[in-house]
Length: 356
Ligand SMILES: Cc1cc2nc3c(=O)[nH]c(=O)nc-3n(C[C@H](O)[C@H](O)[C@H](O)COP(=O)(O)OP(=O)(O)OC[C@H]3O[C@@H](n4cnc5c(N)ncnc54)[C@H](O)[C@@H]3O)c2cc1C
Image 1 (spheres, protein in one colour):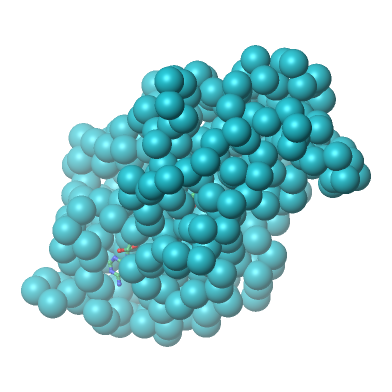
Image 2: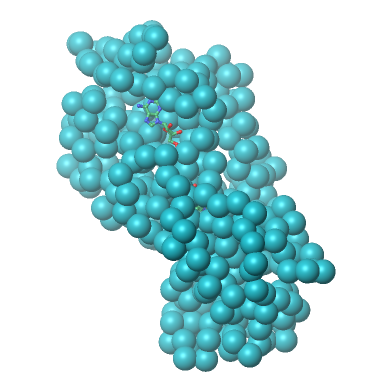
């Protein structure tokens, strides 16, 4: 009998599985042929703890040491840029993102492709890092396996029933019996809850698109910070010698294998060009992923009061990688009744109890 059957092989399921793997037999089931095929394979891979609700920020800050211990962080830094008529928005974001205003000379020094004719204000925070997301997922998968657990791909859960204390989960080819289910199915979490006869919470997947474009001629972007427009209107991040550019779209979507809309990509590139000296003449690649939010935009972590053997690890939104180490520890602690990685007020804000 499996102790914890985790549904979903993205960062949420792997973090939860790693956290539970010291407590009993864990099996992670992933529908696709590879781990991280959906949202977890499509992120901007930034550790940014000053982002999201207060409880999300608490999880982000509590994750720093776990990321450092896993050896997945490398320096990046984040810059906010604004035009001359955006002073009020700039000041609000500077505070919200824990940044310090810098002069344009310093901004140009950090990122010489900015156009001082277009950008009037800049702020900077160096305490944001690139996350090696593939390494983090593999580290958690390895931990599950080294504690005797299993991570199984190409197993899409099709039915979930409960008889007495035992959950029975079937895929096209196999049947699994488990004492507890962990719902970490990303955009599909409400669908998985419905399969299990557990009331849905009302998660909303939102599409976000990304274009990879060449770095400007003769410039090496590898040490440039990630750059955000005010009110998260667009962003750019150096990525393997090129740049990734997003319109920071958040278009409601059904759970699906998402793809980018051409108009969204064009909008992101236009906003990027509107702050820099760059003229983008071709795209190297593009993609989109679904960021899935609970109604209050805060993660949902822990046993469902309707049936405590159904554990949620859901609503990772735009912060699934930033918060993963604390999510791993939170799921372990909430199941064992041991000390939580965040304080009681923030813990109450992530428990599923708030929706029941
Ligand atoms: C463009 C973009 C940029 C982002 N940038 C950042 C960033 O910089 N920093 C950050 O921290 N976060 C970022 N995020 C958010 C982050 O990527 C997500 O929060 C995180 O990947 C969500 O992980 P997940 O495991 O919940 O979902 P997923 O990765 O989607 O995993 C869920 C898995 O469940 C599986 N599944 C679903 N139904 C079933 C079933 N019936 N049976 C078996 N398996 C099933 C799916 O196949 C899927 O693989 C970004 C997201 C996007 C889209």
